[in-house]
Image (spheres, one colour):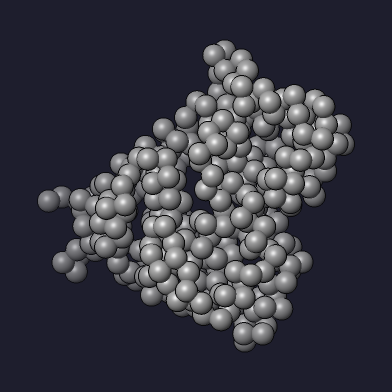
Length: 293
């Protein structure tokens, strides 16, 4: 199977990954916006969890990761709820990890274990290992962090395709982790990552959309119009439940019209994100913050 990604180009994928891509669990992610409720105020920002998940898998492949790590990348967001991280605000997960809390259950209840078994893998091959290309603690680089940053920045118009390709060309694997072979490109990414957090995640209209959506969802949960399990649907399905309620529909329309936006003062505290890329240049290791030219 050949797939094509907007950032990384064309790739041939294995039979296992082809079958996973056709699964209901992966298909659901096509209906979940990466930015939560941002699309309500900025309809052009339609990036989905599915595109990001495929991108992470392809980036791992590009960097020479094993098939099972590519699978882990493809499935790392499989448990994201409708409206993505909005669920963290509703269910009070300040580290934005609600989807991680339910990850194993969502996997086990899906067709994923059967698909893995048909290709010689067990669920424990996926959940019982550390995948160091896929995930790293801050301030390190990893495929997940790199892909969502590049993808969000690109679609929001902050970076060009040439910049994406220039950055990718200077990534290397050393000691099993993603490092940079260029100080210039490492600095570029660090600076763009700051812009992503400040001018995209922290943009007032984006905070407004997600905070107001959170208020609506909390209200409808309290009124038992929706349930916690409804968040395991996709955005379209949950939005349909919201708009099926007169109050819910009214308040969604108010978000789209920016009702009371001028008086809005953001109340969200976003998860702090700062990166300090690892460098490996001329067989010498350092952090970007430690580098002295």
